[in-house]
Length: 212
Image 1 (cartoon, rainbow, N blue to C red):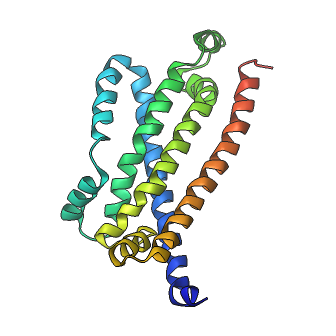
Image 2 (cartoon, rainbow, N blue to C red; image 1 turned 180 degrees about the vertical axis):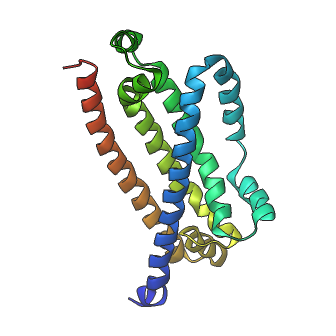
């Protein structure tokens, strides 16, 4: 009770801030990744160069990248959201690209034979069939972003990482647990939510593709 009286309101705020970072970053990353994935699926030769480069970029430690952005943008929420959105892009981009290339070409040819335009084939055939793969990438990206969002507190932007870092600095296990457990619950909850959406989409895509 004493802990809740001291830190309860601050913890609730931290959870809200953390979720806002995750939601904003993943939403922005999803839009960018989906667009790039569609474009790269049209030019696989370019994708073979672009995807490895992005993959290498992902190996840069988050601490380094968010620190560089802090020097450029300052201590504003946009700094954390920008860094997190960039890291959120690759899993979705990769799964979008692979999912679109994995669509049965005979179905695309059948759609072309029915008189569908390229845009119609994309939105009515390719994307619906690639959706399970795309959502799989979204799930990975979301879970990763929940953990990466902890870094926002390193530049004074709050979130659950604030409890973890202060707890480590002061050797206060209660603060560490107070930051770690909600973060873990958030990651698991969002993962299960996206998983349930993926199952529904997979069933729908299976029926669309003629799978019984």
